[in-house]
Length: 272
Image (cartoon, rainbow, N blue to C red; front, side, top):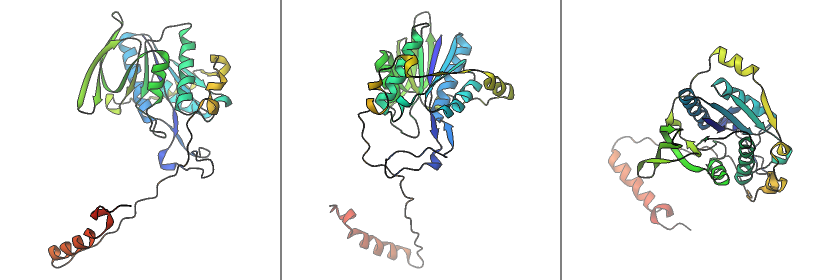
């Protein structure tokens, strides 16, 4: 079984800053981490490789420093790591990102099959959850989102069965391979890398691919391939909270406060 895992290095959400002129996230000088959902995706791929054999390839699109996230994935047990980096990819929205990642997987498939693609449910910096489904659509893979458990992978039959979260509960789905899964954190508990794991990951090669390596159309990459326009973005201010203590006849004071609130537009249903 050959599993590909798509991961992303994201800013630590406690340190997010927005450039008011460009409406983009300021990444310079901001600590970066492996997207938490993606860590679970790597863990699940490695667990199934340990059961069935095969290998796990991890891919990310990003700047050179994204190698740190790839090395972490290698320390979890991934076999191969590819960094997709090129100035042509800068400013990509989810459409352009899914194009670049799908094209990378297609390049890999020229020399070896890919049975499964694992992704985290979403990236914590964008929260769209669109890239995984976009990649599945471009590849023509079956798509299984919000997966909380993989019940079975049968390479001989070319089938997979999973449990996924839906609005009304849990849905059991069985489908054909190849397939793409987006996983929830509940799917597993990510292992801790041991010192031998870290040393092995530090020695492993990380392949660096560009748009020319994968033969990408420059008009579908980066800003050129991104129809999304962000008109404004900002970091929300902390909520303004006030505490009022009641002493004495609390019931009477609460009734008086309720009377005051009833005259506010928001309670009277007179929002403009």
